Amino acid sequence: MADPDYEQKRASCAQRCRRRLGMTAVPELIVTTRRLDSYLDPENVRAFESAGNLTCEIDGYYNQFETLTDMMADDWEGLWEDVDLSTDLAMHLIKLRLMPHGDPEGLLDAGYKWDFIGTLKNGERFCAIVNTMTMPAFRGCGLVSLLKMDEIALARRMGCAFIHTYHNRDNPGFMSVIAPNLRTGFALVADEETPAADLDLYLHLRKHLSPGPPRRTAIIFADGARFVSPDHNAAIMAHLQTVGPAPGRAIARIAPLSWEADQPVKRTG
Image 1 (spheres, rainbow, N blue to C red):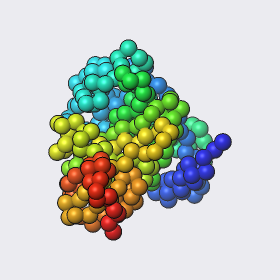
Image 2: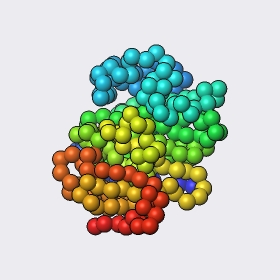
Image 3: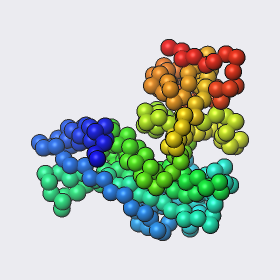
Image 4: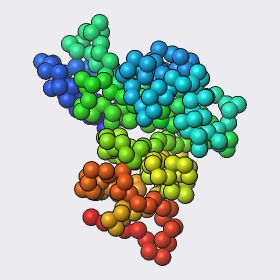
């Protein structure tokens, strides 16, 4: 059965693409998902970086590795320690293309998302986000949010217990990369559960897909505002818009709710 929220989002994105490109008719958005069996696949992150279509914090980052496991061991050092290397490990590509005028010969590449799916030593399946990109002509059309919905659907199909990602606090586009996660129910990960080496520079987020109550954290801002994630994610996004030019630095503390058991964290604002 089709997801009405997803279909509504896809229709909205198609309309925004039509306006952006000045089309007379609404194009069709086509999503495909496939497993990348080789790190050298021409549609993997390494190839896109080589072509100059994908920028990273470190120039040439993906091209310094020859295998998927080498890249993941470096990029996801904290999580990688708990991965069962004897199980199936694979990168999956979600590809979004636009078909104008119903012409399959005129397909335009619009967006890509690379997700790593593996299994932890405790048996839990997980999805780790590697990278997401949209082609310049389609930026601002909501495609990152649409790809995020496809990612969640993929993780569910693959039996993942959670999806994990992290973002650089100093990223000039911090709001554009964190917003799709907060909108779709990702919770900010407590400092106690974040790799020590990442605490100053990165914010980790996780969406739990297993049955049961969500993992919730207390978000304490430097200005004293406090929220609960994921319960107050919309309010967190709104507050991040008010804290100045470096929103990623405005979050001072992320704590388990039990951190202030005698003073339950209350929504501010």
